[in-house]
Length: 289
Image 1 (tube, helix red, strand yellow):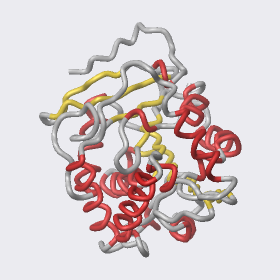
Image 2 (cartoon, helix red, strand yellow):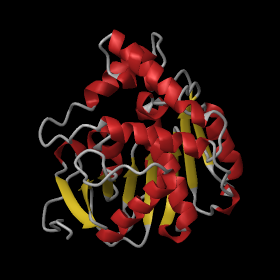
Image 3 (cartoon, one colour):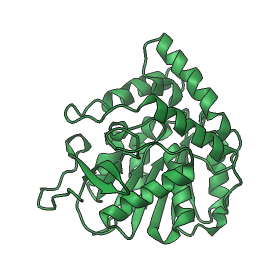
Image 4 (cartoon, one colour):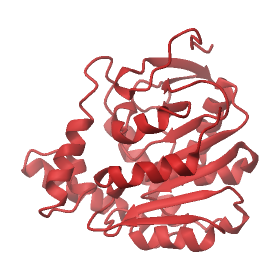
């Protein structure tokens, strides 16, 4: 049952968006929505080991001033019930079940990292659903070195533990004079929401997500030339997790796509350069009223 209350006033601050639930296929999906309702919503697909609380409000809030934004937890993630599947394609099936449960027949997609892989699989499965596509910090199925993400991830988690830091500071940002303060600022922004925080990512679910990414990296490439959606691709110029060359590969393979590469930044380039990136993505997505 959909628990949305359409009589509520418009919320454009992600820190204030209430957490709701909707059931589909025996799974209770936790989600948040904000921005003006009506028209085509922008559905956000989040990264590895992430929950509802891992979206940067400096990106979500500007989009929500113009568009209906929806974020959600996949099965077995955060406050959603169910279990994490071991393939990207199964994650796409779950995302479709969630979107169908909300009753949306057309969506725009904003995706980051693992979320970008799920978004691509979703477009392959149901291309007519997606009108516009934003792929950030991600790569195509069968992309070079995607299957090495687990090794990089565990290495950086260890580095973070030794310095008592958030792993995202190592995974998403360069460890230099520019990247370190940007990392601290990003992690601080994720703490702006102080009430109704999401449940943490379970370790077993995190491990299954890594297996799914490895399988995706070793899979047969999809025919991205079939994608007809206007597509925006963005990344930092030094992405260690999902190498930047894969963003360039996506750009070459998706006809008419736009590519934005941000200097002196890593996997989290869009977060480090949010002041530059946000106007680009807001323009790309446009208004839908």
